[in-house]
Length: 286
Length: 95
Image 1 (spheres, rainbow over the protein chains, first blue to last red):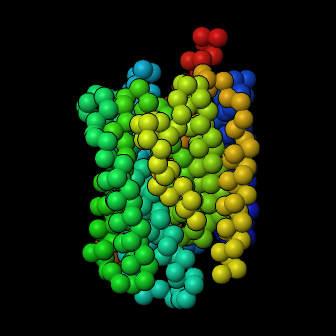
Image 2: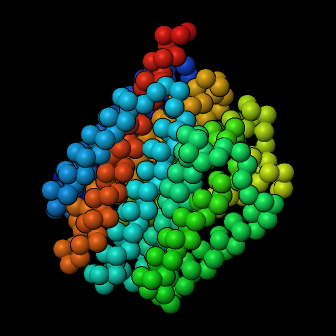
Image 3: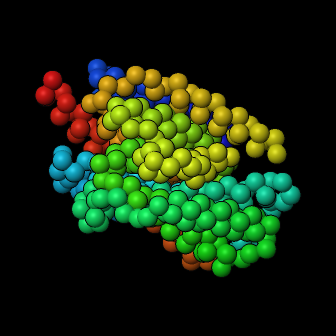
């Protein structure tokens, strides 16, 4: 299928997501909204499989089969009372997938000595690094949130008052490594360092937050996973990824705010105790 | 560069649309909405399919990362929509 048709179908999928999210905000239309969004996803996947760029179908179908099997089993087996944990895991996997896409793009850009150059190359590299940072923070942050809700990790507030400085330090270190990577002053060792720093940051961001505030944190991490998907979209130059990622990112942030109001908490208090500090990592991505 | 500006415009417009979409949400729908939009963020599966499917054969790392990304994203998508559906059905029976 040619790229014009593919992009038109992607647009249709994105519109289905918009209608789906809209539907999910009202009790009457919620079930239909969820189905519309699922239909949009199915459409996006089928259309991508028809893309001429996709050559190695064995890996793709194996991945889809394994993922579907695990996903169906998880969805059937999970208890209704464990829903917050479930959303946390799924969200972490979404962030992990964006991290995987970004890492795959990084290594294929390195290996194939890309034809990109100048500004385009800088943009592509920046998008890769941002997707890595946000994807990894989502992945490890969701893992810690899951651990707290499942009571594998202690649910109470862990940490000390200086924790936010550690977070800030990790964030600044990540940004510095990204800068060096984009300027070609670091190689794949630096890339792995960035992955490590970002994974650590996700953990230290969520660790100090108490179990009762976890739903808000998961909503926020959900917004991050949307932004990570949008960053992956900038790597691939793919419109459906950018639109849907931005939609989930923005609506996720608003939902986080609404949930805070409903729980009578301020978002900054949830994230930083009573201290007011700079907002979480890279909401201003791209 | 021009292509980037087009993509950036899409991103900015979608951010505003996302903000406007969510206005008043009844508290019972907070978790299903979060779960549903989480499933939508699994759209990164498109990137994963492209990364795994078009990966060069010169390395084994790229297809492997692509495979893992597809598995993760598929779980996110499939379980996400199914679980959201289960939650919503439960509300219906109650109310």
